[in-house]
Image (cartoon, rainbow, N blue to C red; front, side, top):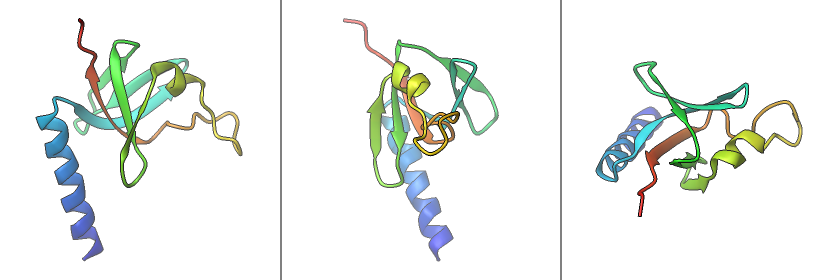
Length: 95
């Protein structure tokens, strides 16, 4: 039953991301490069022109590109904190 409820929650997040014009995937950080890995294994290279939101298990939190690159785990300082997180991204609107 727990697997089904997790799937329903993920599907709801996927639909919400689509409706809000976000792309959903997994955040990959290596060699000072931030990527969003999509379910079909395509990658989107991110930069400062993207809004990046990471999912903590219950809600999304907005982070900057610089935070993605420069925030490390306190107990494993060689590991990027946000690497591997579910994330959603979209381009910032130009005013």
